[in-house]
Length: 307
Image (cartoon, rainbow, N blue to C red; front, side):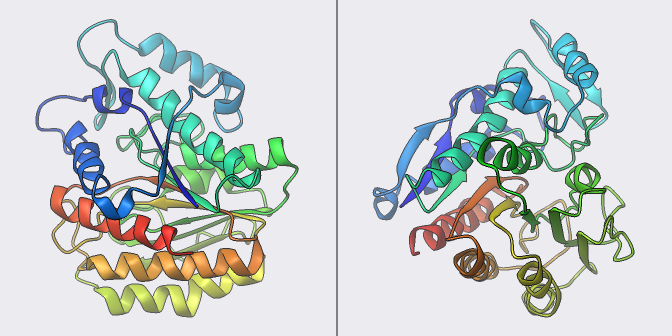
């Protein structure tokens, strides 16, 4: 069975008119997942993450800075791309809570896998700073939660967002038992993600040039990412599911189609079946063309349901 974790507060987080990471992104996904074919998916309310959970990745002084910055009204900028309104702190806590609760549910055998339809995204949030629309790094926290709460050792994150997940890479850099692999466009924001960035041998970057399409994306998986992940033998797999490499997305120049995301999802599910009893949790990152985001998210969840 597949679970979807969501919360209405994630629709209230709003960084201002015209910001590409807006509430309509989540509304488009929710509308797509309201189709009859997804009726069998169980929806669960994302809980509020505890501060000790958030502190698995972010030091207390950074958490205190974010809490202090949260406005009672209006919008406050955390960096040039990232802002908070009165709902943002709770939305960020619910996004973290969704991933941690999804890990718990999958570990308990309540579902094979889960998709967290939440925002703000997280993979650009470094341990000590917000950036790139991200406040707390939900997936990195989820990986550490899997280890802290469930006595797992080897946990992997695969990130197929078009932008490199610098925050997750930074959080995992020195820990050989945490695996991070990313396919992303390069050059592109945030400027990290070169193949030479390897951490403790646990970081695997597969940059793609502007204009690359599905064949190059699939080759990166087949020739590099999946073999590295197979060799790591994860006990749990998390996905940073960004759909902004789609050919219709306005913020980048890759040329992926919806079926490329479905293919990648199936490949990662097969790997999870080989190594970690199918245990997989996916959380939404980017994707800024609403129709493409809705179609790719639906294809992703369709793949999750098929196992």
